[in-house]
Length: 281
View 1: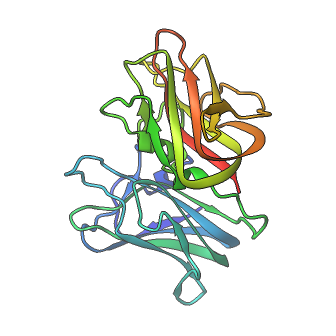
View 2: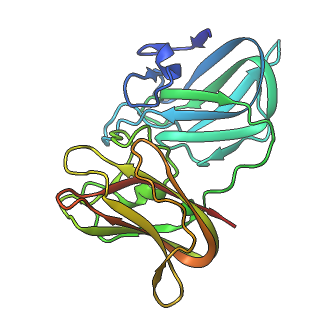
């Protein structure tokens, strides 16, 4: 697949190598203007979704930041046209994972135009283009509308990471925010609280394991607030313990304002989570 760009640092092909990790990456050169990244598929393709993983240097004085805004465009044979009805999540670009859906386009060439934030450049660690085909809508991740709290959070970690909507590249994620409880051991929990009751019947948990004090738990389970106490969710499927993957549990629907992930450590190490997703109605 050919690639073009207006200005760049690094290897342009690294944004399509299949690995949304911090290094290597494609970097623009504008610090107060526009850059763009183009894909030429070689023949016309239909697509309606683009996923963008923006480089974020993290440090306050870092060179790369998510852009102030971006626009998905396609070439209609004579000029560039903005894809219609673009819905961006999040609405304001953030470091790492972003997704935009729009009315289906059939084109050979597409590009994303970035408006850099002042004083920083836009970088891409990965771009993915999909055709979701307007089929059954994907269920909403209700966890993103909740407030996350925990029994304890290491000062350098963030409990808000568990419901930020970012899909981790692996359990040893060194790029995105994480929740960890080092040096605490024993039974630990993360909780999602909604302002009003939600009906839930499925959850997905992605474990943090850095092999340096944060390890996989010995066991875990889901609990919900029944109005007076926490109770195990009824009819739960198997609680799997897979690294580098979502661990999905389905259960009999419950109506609650709180969902808790209760983790039991292995006795010597702490535990952590990268993402918790909750689904229902």
